[in-house]
Image (cartoon, rainbow, N blue to C red):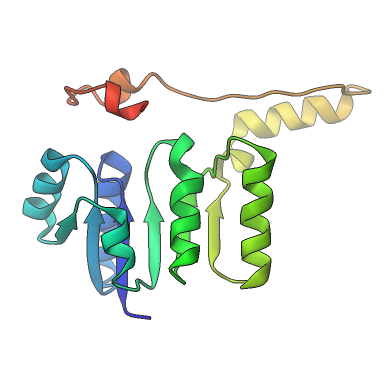
Length: 166
């Protein structure tokens, strides 16, 4: 295992992760993004190596992978990091099926200490308020909560919107 850190997804969150790793003098940082424009921008701004392919980055045997991609892609990159023997960090881990979360749990239990999902929404005031109201309200049959923003409003400088949802 090396002191290499991979940041997958070089949009706004990925750029923040690169910036933070650089500030911590974390070691070798490599950005991964399919979009050439993002790779170029990050290479120029932060002076790091970038790659287009995640599989190429995993061959470098990274210490950890910071996953900063759209939620429907989380599982794929979490599995890729674990299969490469790396730890991973992902904000607000999203899986699409129970089979995906069961798969991640099974893999983490087989080799503990490599999964670092952030659960920031659980400590936000709106979720705490909702949890308190639900806890006082009697029998609950179902709860569905969703918190999102429309990406073109969040990333007005992005000219290509479609790639965020593919």
